Length: 220
Length: 328
Image (cartoon, rainbow over all chains, first blue to last red):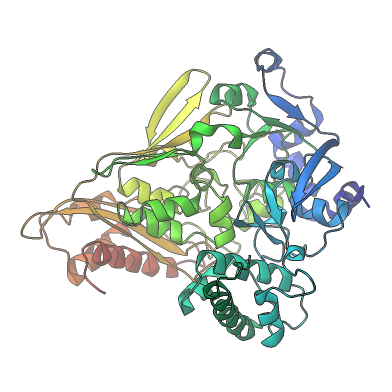
């Protein structure tokens, strides 16, 4: 499982750009075959700079409150490390280009695309995935609201949407219709379940407000 | 994505020393929202990534009461959006137009300026100037609906993708750059260049230089706004955009004006004549329409993008009316 990065890389080499692009544009083509610039004199003087890779190195990621040790190449994204190395598969790999939101996770309290953060960059930061939401068999209000409002069809975008909704409500506890529309703008649902999702956010906002005013633990 | 080595300097001196002598050998990683996608598509194939997020001084953000500001390269789009809401509306509005909450949380100010063009030929591997194997340009006879309508007489036909650049130009901002020879500053409009070869970049930076931040001069009394014409409200780049900054006297007559256009040319486009024609006039529907027309006077659309001329005129008009506080 952990060697998925190489396997995938072979499968994903693009047909078009590989073809003659490297031949056509001298820079990229040459860069692949020559060793790093003989600007080594400059690099030799760069004391105190940690250089890792290109091979695997050991890192630790704080995933949902638990430190997890793994070995990855620098090119492995946080999303792939979670899914392929740590078996935390809630975040989904769909576009892999910072566009669809299926990989959304919360990093140090901010919603990000897991596909566009390198795993090694996420060291020392707090990573929250959809797996962190339910506790003691109880769904998080956002999750419950998705169930109640039928806010999914195929369900593949759902974990990303749930994290985006949680982040939205953490930052806008009483969102307006515009807040909801724009706040979830980074996630796509190809089944088009947006009506259910909007209803779910509204329900979750109300539920979370009740919990807060009761003096209970603030969900999330 | 190819393998690469990953360096994490903590000072800008170290970062610059880690950068390559030629473009493409090394790439700078900040937010990563553009770079990682380019690498996954093998459009960028660096052997070394220099992650600059450990350089603390690049995250500073200072806005003084007179509107002068120093914005570190690593300030995120979301931080900029919030911080400039009152002080520099044009900048805040441009930041609000950027993609999605996720991108605004990750993406940085310098990353917005240095992101590579979104031209689909470039992204599909046909090089910055979009040529086929025989060296023929693909854009003129291809699908050029999102390409340049201005400044398109050279080999570069893509549009500059930066959302912040037009606003920064309207505010007369400068890019702060650090390299092996020390620090330098360049006006934002001079930072961008239309490349003549696919090995060039779209900005006046050397391969071993680093954008460290942006400086904005004092802007007391300046009224600014950005208007983007978009197909989708989020997750996409505007089809055309205009940022304006004007000053009005007691009689509401324009005493100074700067207008910059986005997504219409290989560089952000400074509409000097459109701005100077406003001097001495009041901002009205009529004068704003006239400025929009002047801003696109030199436009030479390609085969599928004449519609962008009209959109650009509308962007200029609405930005001017918004800056002057007139509802369109």
